[in-house]
Amino acid sequence: MSTETMMVGAGCFWGVQYRFDNIHGIEKTLVGYAGGDTESPNYDSVCRGDTNHAEVVWLEFDNNEISRRQLLELFFSMHNPTTLNRQGPDIGTQYRSVIFYANDEEKSLAEEVMKQAQANFSNPIVTTLEPMADFWAAEDYHQQYFQKRGIHGGCH
Image (cartoon, rainbow, N blue to C red; front, side, top):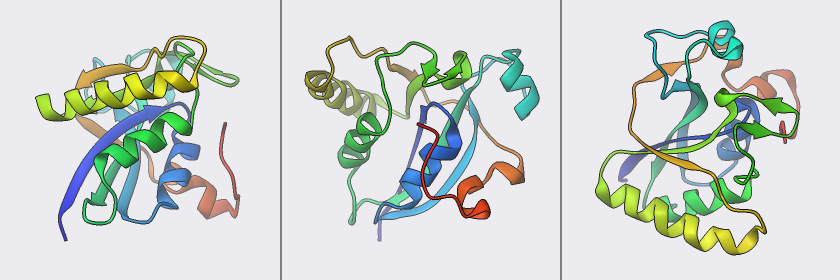
């Protein structure tokens, strides 16, 4: 097994985590905050827009079972990457579409997949590519939010 990690934001992290948790090859997911300006953000401060963090999902995956490219393709299919700081009724920088990359190879792959995904959208993709940032795990009640409540679906 060869475990790799990836961090993305695609709106409300509850639904994004739910989708990734149901993908073969995903070993672990955590929801949290990344890409902001403050240390140790919490849900209230992120939702107020005080921190510039995005709601993100941290993924650990077995690249022998699913590739980073496949995960990026799924990422672009599970949300609308053409709406700036918005997914459905959720509005704010915390809901931005974002891919965090650890190195030039990951950035190049994200750019390539994003270019290919553009063919599926009439409006331009506004997903940002950002250097890997500190990840702050969200409060426990946010982890596997839908699964804990018996909800089958997502935010968007």
